[in-house]
Length: 248
Image (cartoon, rainbow, N blue to C red; front, side):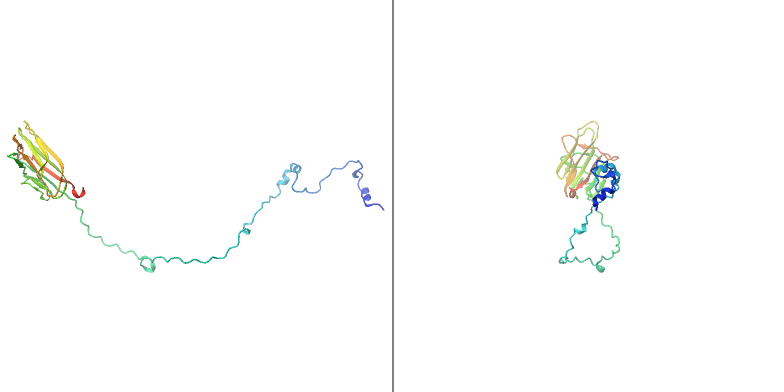
């Protein structure tokens, strides 16, 4: 009886017997190579492995979330709000109609005081001190200036602007004072000369209620006079309130 191994050898071609020193046929790959391929196979066919699908791992987050706990105990209720304004069901009522326009109020009247007087007749000095009277009234609010005495009586206290204008007499001296009560506030003077000329003096003066402002002609060693004539007004004395004491 022939052994099974011997029968197998006898059935093979002569060139394929092992150990007989005969040439061998090259080995032909008959199946798909295992994954991953070796470096030699990648170099031989690089496009073969590029066509294979790519796998991306994912993690299901829902399996990491814990279960929902039970509802807690309800806290105390808050304080009740304030009641709304009166109206239907807590809402504001309708806006009423616009009323009639009232009468205009009295305008705010600003305090005022002013005077402007003149003298047309010339005047020579007499013995002592002499108040200059005036005969022409230009402005005299509330009748505060008395022409006969030549005095302005202050009724609205405040700061006043005062001005005196005279015409000198040829070859005669001119010497006058602007007076506040019995005190000389300013002087107007001119030395004697061949030609007569206009002279002026002005100042700001605070006056209290009841103060009197007037012009005084002073008698000196020389003949003292102021020139005037009926045709033109050469002598004027003016004043007005600049700012009342209530606004100072």
